Length: 55
Image (cartoon, rainbow, N blue to C red; front, side, top):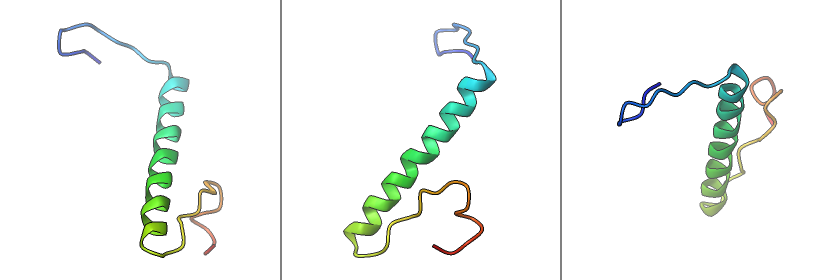
């Protein structure tokens, strides 16, 4: 990846995976806050079974 000034950056696989996971957790938190503000149940943050059972 290159910056706007042309500097070249490289990232390890582990760093990219960590970024993806923390980014998803950030958005789960945002959705939960918004849902609470309108009186609805927050989004489940259980990343393992969230898609398999209705919590």
